[in-house]
View 1 (cartoon, rainbow, N blue to C red):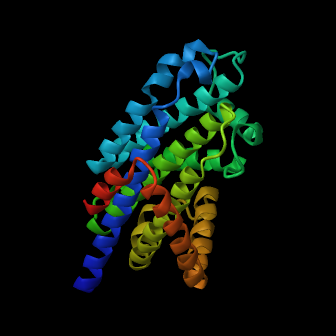
View 2 (cartoon, rainbow, N blue to C red):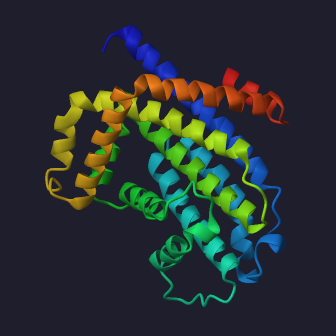
Length: 283
């Protein structure tokens, strides 16, 4: 790779990380304004509820330490805890027994998606996030591949950024529910932030896919037994569609992103977060 292009890519990654760090700070601060007693009547979940914010901070710290697998492990547990809190606050009479599985709670989340969240979320989103975190954590060919990629300078940053975005998406999901639970209006500030974060991660993914074009032999080496695996096929299709979308609509996407970023910038300037966000972006 040309040295100048490589340096530009590193700089782009740093900008992605800084922007996502701003969202992390804002969403954490917003979470701290909610009280358990106003959210849930299911008192058995109170201790788990009280650990949510500190666990998010721990995941973010592990990502900053470039500890991909431990960050993903705690994030998956945190995701399960959030789903548990949402479902038990929505239905305090739900019987939580020893044999209650994460899949049962996710199914309840999917079945009640329209009541629990705004239309930002589709019921398929919840299982997709969970499957991704499981593939990162469990010893399998995907983890073998990711362990190799995370040891390379070119790919490590992209994997960490994608995990950080996943964390922020889970945060937004949680805040989205908390607001709806208290019959609060949807936060346009939060919505613009997560939309901008999604655009930032699209940039990150496009850089990752560009690097992987020259490394497909590595993917085939690690995924040799998974060519016909449904998960691999589905994700390859998603990547191909995303890649095509980015190439064919790059100007329109960039134009829309500029408008969105300008609106978010105005909201930030009018908020209590301006100084902190300026500091984070300046690095």
